[in-house]
Image 1 (tube, rainbow, N blue to C red):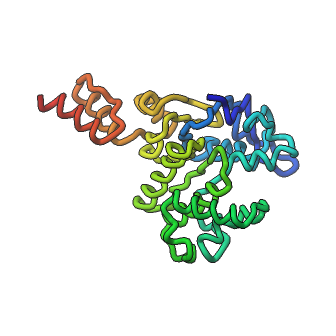
Image 2 (cartoon, rainbow, N blue to C red; image 1 turned 90 degrees about the vertical axis):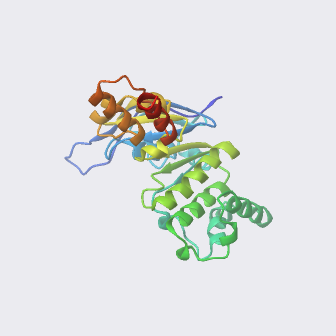
Image 3 (spheres, helix red, strand yellow; image 1 turned 90 degrees about the horizontal axis):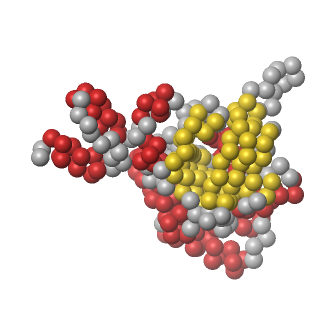
Length: 283
């Protein structure tokens, strides 16, 4: 499985006014993401996770080091168009991405600007709306939709462009629990059914456990990188980085410390947690 994104000593500092010192946000990130992976990137506010996401799409260009997208150096202007075709972005506020007054027109907007033939646009729009479960809403006005439905339309607009990688920057941050569930179901489907590489920037632990890999950012660097079960059992290290762990792991970890018992603490689901507790205390 080849790499679709690779960073080497990636650094980024936001521009400042004359006479001020630039404050580095990314401080030398080296990371490799393979095609078809589902990677969750965690970190508290200011950890650099959203800045890193912007580098993947050439919204942010490195101030040091390099970021490759499908072997293209994002620093080279002649690569920008292809980089953004390869890696599409979905942001946390869907209202900032919806531009048309009808759902299907919104999904078609980028395709029209790309010069895609009308018949192909029709097919891509219909397929994308079906993929996110919004085909029946294709004639509706976006402003009449719920937050979760709007975000699914925004994702449909991305799917229609047929990118090889989708970066979702806190896509559920403004949604209620139902909307979060709807969007995460679509995200999983993008990865599993369509083979699209998914990079999910989030602070929700229950979303991160659905990924195949978790990268933890802290103070502009990669603090941890591994499978969810491997990462979330490092409770103290995560707490020191101002992060929580899934509630199931937190319950088992605190019980283990209070009772002096040797409990497995790697339960990522409520069912796994219940099975551990039943075996420990009822058998």
